Length: 387
Image: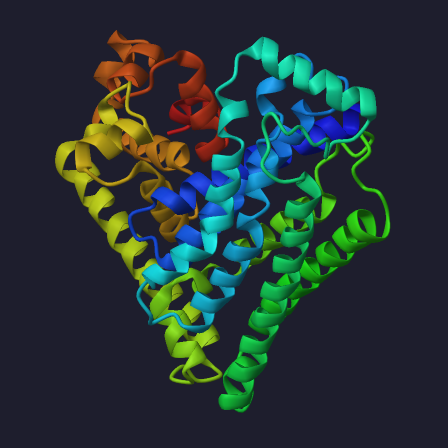
């Protein structure tokens, strides 16, 4: 039981985080927005399904009957996602909004219950628990028996699944399968979505048409929704290019050749390397010109603020060019400065190594000694005595 709660908690959190990310990103496309709303819907279904379990629903009656309308949206957004993937150069068609009408209709039907007091909701929940039927029909609050909505949702699920598969087959037929063959993982993505939707459809038919799936023991969210979400996230994480409309359009229209993806990755990699090498040169010049390394409080974050360069890029650039961490690079400069400017017979006779080290930018005796021994292979005293 606890394992399932952890799984649903983690999955619902991921759904909401990914959904919010795709919904509000500035460079978002229609595909991003549809994917975002789908993730948010799945996230809510998973969360609400926990609170409408028999052991929780009396305490949280406000969640009762809130999941049912959302199921009207899932087949719609699944269909729209595939449609806009196959038509990446198309602007949003406003008439597609009419496909969400059943969702708003059921919201309107349940509005009286939603606006009722908590005590009224608890009484309604108790009546449902007495008959042990999640699809308990109450003429006081509902216009139609919930099973009518269930059959309609299953029908829409099957209808949209059929349309999606028809569109995809038609697209491949028109394109001769050539574009899809350019990148097999794309074909795997679409086929994977069809497979999850088909299994979900079969699951619903088996549980709500062939069997009585309305008994209260069915309090868990649909595992197929969780599996589909994880599949989507895994695929997009590995192939983020397909959320870029320009790339998707060129790919589907056959404008991108078979070697594009590997070549494009190499180009981007080279551009990134050149960019980081340029940063490394700028930082090196900045160190020489300003001697900022003498600041005992210097960190990569502070250096980023001083130079206007993202501190993560600074670390990557130094690692790329010098094969050193930022701290190692910084200590190298300090030791070289100490050897070239501070160490002589006069300073050695008047000042301790700790004072000299602080003048070179080392904040503590320990950091100075460990850095010196690492780069020179001996303690400062042994090293300078041998000179």
